[in-house]
Length: 308
Ligand code: FO1
Image (cartoon, rainbow, N blue to C red; front, side):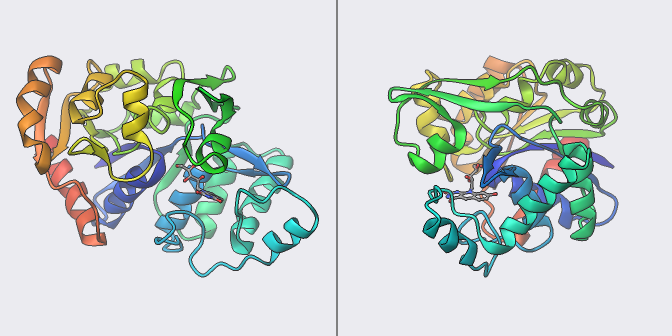
């Protein structure tokens, strides 16, 4: 059973972990958002790839939701002494990840190959595919000006009002990504921010067509539960961009692309409207993942509902 999951941020990463926890009959490929990527201290940081690497290797600082558990910050203190910008906090072990990635890229590896090399070194069985090997940065137009994604997300703490989100560059998805979509038995849009986590992947030319043409069912899992994002600014961002902040709002964004919507039990009342407006089926499941068991149970339930 080949599962291809589009993910970025916390929810999608947790669901990736859920699929990875299932027995060996699931062959997992995660297509990772790269819109959040940024150069920090001369190194390429890929936060969504990092979160996948650390989660699937059992290293993630789960309290924080990013970085490595138990990491120290000696380098951070030295950056501070040197007068370097320190609003983006990179731990010592985390720094090794970014340094390794940057070295592999400087030796001519693609981001796809560098990520595969690092995932293998960390003992990860799932395939993590950057959505593209080219520059594809999320740019946030706000009431306080045009901001790079991490500038908006970390430095400005998501305070500015978002007016528009766009993607910098003319990137194309990798062949590996298009192939993972067209050969999958199941395609899942993870419960990640639809605008800045899933949006950048779907914006790459050919990705939407590949999903429409794929034989596999396409399932979208709502990251909005009871009108609220479980983590991050997805709800406020949806509203300020003119979308309803609800599972229905997410379904509208993915209408025409998706065969089934997974919504949380809290949102059972939205099921009929989603079905009526999008023509897709609706599965009502417990989508809030508090434990590893919750993650695996949701992954299993999605498989059962979509494939039987
Ligand atoms: N998030 C923060 O809120 N503050 C940080 O200082 C920070 C550093 C950081 C370093 C490496 C990394 O891979 C991720 C990091 N993140 C940090 C998380 C990241 O900014 C966001 O959570 C994602 O981009 C949103 O999905």
